[in-house]
Image (cartoon, rainbow, N blue to C red; front, side, top):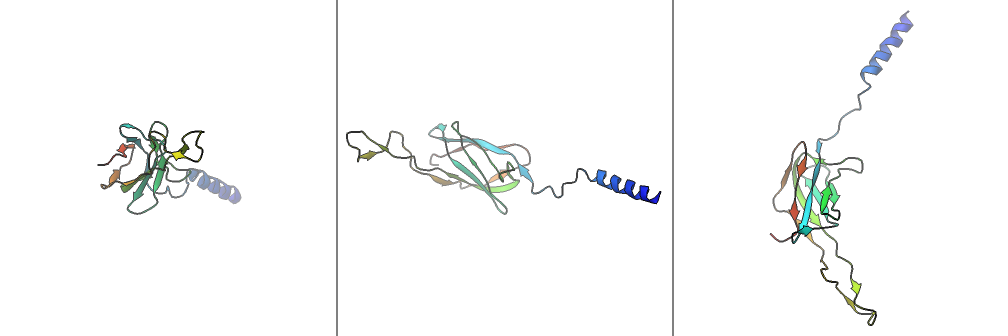
Length: 139
């Protein structure tokens, strides 16, 4: 009888903690937005949010200029709080100008130089959905 009571008490304790997963971790919130350049979607831009303390979050724009931040490879979002923002692009590859002069390399029309833009004003990430739209154009 005592043995059954101990087993029952153990099962009751386990069932009470079935939802326990330990600490929930830092407070994260979803962050997304659109990056443009000269009014057009900017593709392949690395968007980085750096909190005043803690791990940064990063995302990359798609063909429509849309990004979503990832905190880790498994967790989406950014820490709730104040962040500095950096937008970074890579140079577009150069292409040969013609088959007649294979050693001549020229820039294709619309070629963009790399950009590294640190936003001067910090942004605030709040609990819940956050949307930030930025431009790579000079302020």
